[in-house]
Length: 314
Image (cartoon, rainbow, N blue to C red; front, side, top):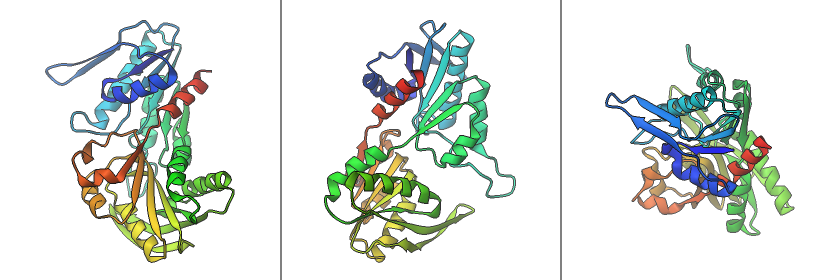
């Protein structure tokens, strides 16, 4: 196996390499004066199973779009030079949220991304907590795997809640299935009932409304709010407020991906959410030096990807 981590995700790739007990293979990336980019392996991939790690979040030095193009170019180079199988490890998958048409002439962006991976003849893609698993599965014709962070979330939650009554809540109707799956896993682990709830939320033309109606019993419970990602923190903040009004004793938030775009830092400083947990698929560079950073716990997930790679390559 050859394991590559592209420059923009080298730190995460190194953690995956450590979890696998494999070295990172050498590659080259060069940016030319006109901003075009060249990327190539520096070891011969002929007949090799190749794994390429690249997360697709945007950051100041490089956009998510540029990361996607570089990943596709690298996969194409591996294929052109005789790689046997190619697995793309994409901890955060850009455009997964745009999985259906909600306005006239909308793109289904996740399907376009899937077609790009198919066009360069990638064999498999592994990501963490796709926004909508059914839409993710339907978008890809190649083998596509979405990993669950629930075991990581459970360990962090149980260290804080002890014997308290708990409930798992989705901050919107669309995440009810995600919350249900985690609630069932928690019940199996604890051997006692775990309640479930969701909060009403609607989005139209980018404007969020609702967020006051809670369905489910949360009175006196510690409520674990679960979502796939945190962007502005507005959805979590709105849900936590509604849950406390409905009688929740305290709230904790869990999400696979912590983007924390503006105004998330300010929201974290004032929120009534006791703790927020995310994985390390996206570095928390937008929270550096901000008071709200101390409220956020980071759950390492490289071992999840290492196990998935082992399973994929047999």
